[in-house]
Length: 90
Image 1 (cartoon, rainbow, N blue to C red):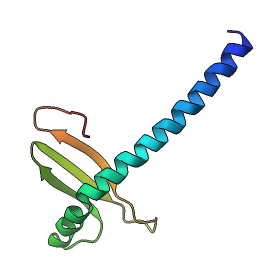
Image 2: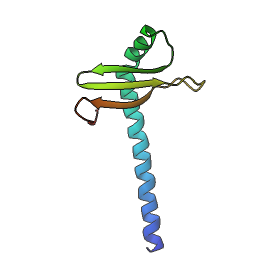
Image 3: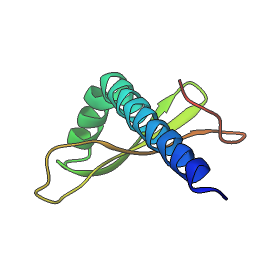
Image 4: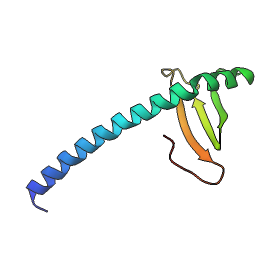
């Protein structure tokens, strides 16, 4: 592959990477807005401050994980699973 093509490809990959990071941040924010309160309530009901809880939202089961480490408080979303398979969540 010519060096010019490699350089162009690298530029395209850099741009795509930035777009993916931005989309991921928006997605995670949307999940937090929608589920953070319910996840916190579910953890309190189980008598725990951190860890994994499952929330049912229609046909989806959302698995929310809040790590036990001293890291910044963040919700890690493992999956949104439809009973009959996996679908995109928007």
